[in-house]
Amino acid sequence: MIAQLIEYMQYPFVVYAMIVGCLIALCSSLLGVTLVLKRFSFIGDGLSHVAFGALAIASVLKMSNQMLLILPITMISAVLLLRSGQRRQIKGDAALAMISVGALAFGYLIMNVFSTSSNLSGDVCSTLFGSTSILTLTGQEVAMCAGLSIAVIILYVLLYNKIFSVTFDEDFARATGTRADLYNLIIAIVIAVIIVVAMSLVGALLISALVVFPALSAMRLLRSFRSVTICSAVISVLCAFFGIVISILAGTPVGSTIVAIDVLAFLICWIAGRIMGTSA
Image (cartoon, rainbow, N blue to C red; front, side, top):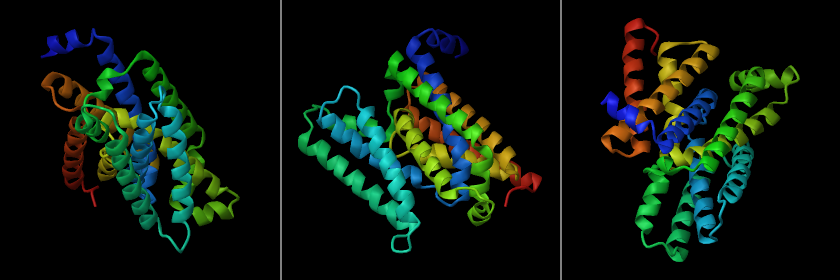
């Protein structure tokens, strides 16, 4: 099996998949801790469905670079979701449900009405569940994903203290002069970028797993924000790596395999936490 893996690693598309997969998993896990603590875990679902709808429009328009449409629409939706969720008239969960279900429905409707593909079911399945799209990335797509991922990591490191403050107590952060609304906006936009990039890895329906599971796994073992964030990043990258390896060797769907590994890691961390007395 090891010899077979070494043989596969000689192919550029396998190396591309490893690089992009690990970078996306790392980015997702960093902000995942913040989203879980702010009880906004399912923002990944809502924005991924928006990205799916934007992808459907871009496909119908036959755009050569679909990211030019998908990324701005997803970012705008992230901002609207954040602002509407802060109003009393429309609570966060209601706004999330409206955007999520509406975008998914319109996206699928557009693909059915206007698509000229001979394999519509296969295209939809690949988009929603990831399929093998990450194994067909080109060098240009890898460079773009890597650039966006590195930008997200750098931004997170630079704004770590501000993100920490708005995560735990926004009112106190505002009282100390921190522009909480601005940093919440930055978090929403960064999450939108991560969602768009992660669609090539696990698909639109499974993206929230990359955000939620590593954070929850780390919380079973540790308590401080910094240690949970680091542990979450390590767990996420390892799960992505082994998920891609297993999917290549076993011929299973990449996205589903990675999520299955994430679920297994959560169960292991939960059991370890119960044994050590750190799991709630």
